[in-house]
Amino acid sequence: MEARGDVPPSLARFDALVRSDGPPPSFEEYSARMGAALCPWRQTCYFDARARRRLTSVANARFEKIAADLGVSIPASFWRFLAKRGAHGSEVREVVLGMEATVPLRLKYYLVFRGPAASTVEALRVALGAPELPATLHMGSVCILGLDFHPCGLHDFKVYVRLDSRRLPHVIENFADFRALAVGCRYLVFQHCVVSRRRQVYFHANSPAVLEDHLALDPRAEGARGSLADTLARMNRRLEGRDAGVLRPWIASFVYRQGALEATPANIYFHLGRG
Image 1 (cartoon, one colour):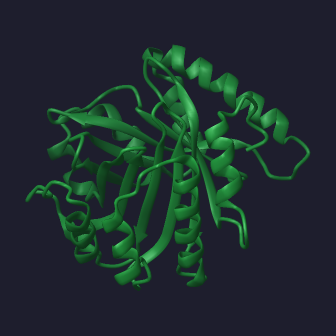
Image 2: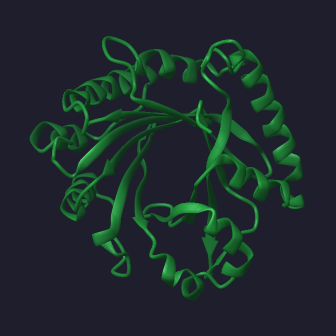
Image 3: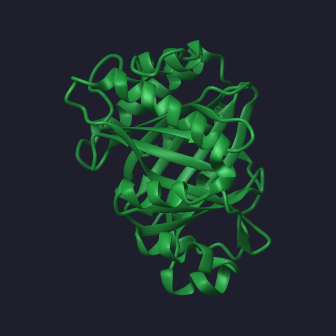
């Protein structure tokens, strides 16, 4: 985090607390929200519950501490869920804590699954009083559940499902515009936000060069891309000599609206020291 420069105080505080008192996160990710106004102040920390089961308790304790410190109101029903059922099931692969330093700030608690998770998702939905999930959502393919909180409580309830690559041309009207990008990806994920009703498709690339090439071809993203490139260049210069590698893009999301994907990515996710 110290490599970023001009970090918002709330994000610096999150960074300090998310790695305090014990083992550090298993993996870290940085991302930027694109669009008319670039928002690069987003951090995500993964705790590998499959490799070390105690990391689930570590992550939960840190989330509670972070929420209290940053003044984010987490519904009591969420804490009751963790106390009664928790995120210790065999279906949970990783517990993920994240922060977006917007105004108001958004604190994130995500579960990454490795097995059937429909019952866990539904139990949390009921506990938090989120709207019902659409019947068209294939719950057997759920791979991530995302909970976004702001200072007043639940901001959004997000369900992510793996997409069947064979169906993509039939469900995305302008898939031809993204075919080359999809070919260079390990898999694609569909996100449905139950509260905001926002929908996106996430492209998980085989290598950062796949996304770098795709982004370079999009003139509509030139303004935000230039600002993001400057930010990344500053961060990577600060990382020089630390044997940590550089930040490069591995995931991009595109808003899905009225059966088609928007041309310019909504979010880009960067990993350190890979590729």
